[in-house]
Length: 208
Image (cartoon, rainbow, N blue to C red; front, side):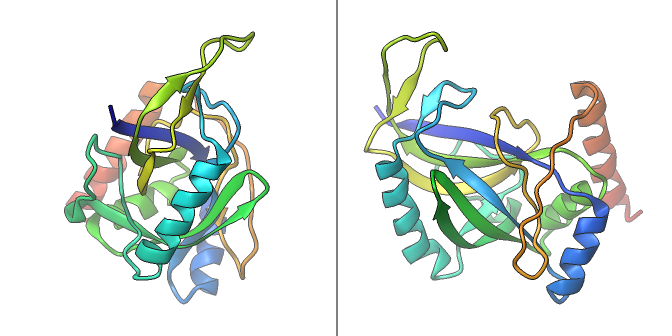
């Protein structure tokens, strides 16, 4: 049976990189980096066959991206429908680099997009989450523990920005004249991280 499948890749950006990106993109905040990874087990124990991801990425590019409606939300819902009230960004393009699906994403001037921008500016560590519908099948156990493979019935729905990244991967950074800036960083404690996000959102609502 199909279910909503979500997986995360962490990334973070610096205020300096954000300022450079907006300066070089006519005031727009544009980030570029790895959206999903094929043929590698993630921390959720899932493996995405490249053939399946290539098919879905091609379909997503030919329809959603081509029609400028490759929209995503801030914090993924357990839903197969993108909620326009919570849209924060739009995927501009995607391409393959070996087994990595790399994409360019524009942060929109929506309420959720403004929150996302402020989180970036404050150095909050976030993640990019692929959301889709599909089924999984258990693979043979190995030294890495139980592994499941995403099946060919997988359908890509959207890429969302989330506060709880759980898979190892490349960090996204704002793009400056097409260049990809990568970085790695850590945060001390989930509580501190979550409280800081809540404070930033409250400041935005208060107009501070």
